[in-house]
Image (cartoon, rainbow, N blue to C red):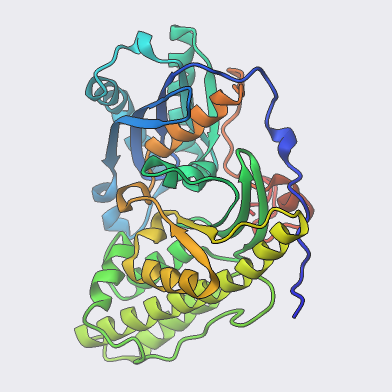
Length: 390
């Protein structure tokens, strides 16, 4: 069976400025502040490409947002501002280096909550200017895409499922800055569905871990929930209807602990089924792409990254799919699935090795698709004055 759409070659290589590559060891300070974690990390990349993480500090804001059942952008921005200087200092101290040892500063410059992104990016600009070293503006999603390399080498090419609170998409990854979208959510992200469903059931914040814990004592077949786009030949996702179905099912239930456990288990199983089904379609598309460029590799590599990738049931479902389809599952350790600065430092180090740096007038971006070409010409979601999300 021939699957559509046909996959074009990567078209956004122009996003990478071509400078002389760096051939020496590099020590990178990474800064992450795109949502509700303030993080800093120091990483050393040797001239042979070996990665050594020297420190990774994360300050969570859960206690600030828990009363509201979700992240409040204004509160997040103020919380970042209050701790970022301390977090950076701790990262440098724990790495046992001096600021003068740094080769470059890498910071998330999008996508994300704009107040937080600005806070981290301005801190990075100030350090880069005072130390007279390069600034590297990192796409937060590229940090997730490269994060498996924090624990073990993950060579290109590979198929990526990026699944988090703000994004759910499948991409073919050919190299640094070379991403081709195979599928994306047309409305809500899987992580948002977790958080909103947890809020509906009164489970608290953050929703993902709460539902995963509650699901352990529930029956996954207790509620019949919709599986959007199931068995369709494209690789897109939709989770808005699933959120609504969970809310209605809970309203019709007796709202007991048993009902919450059963609904959590049913919801989690539904997410597993949808991610597995949509990824299976993307795997077929990915194989077609490699065959068309005469770059077939076996077994193929599959990466799952992002906060939702920390869910063990989802990992197990995707691992089973990989075994069925001839892929090797490569995922970052659980501590690097959620937002962290180690992945930002890694992305910065890899870009510096290519000779790519940014000027101090680089802007913070609330939206920044990895596959910029596809997003602007055929947006899957969020097309507005700030540009498409995917």
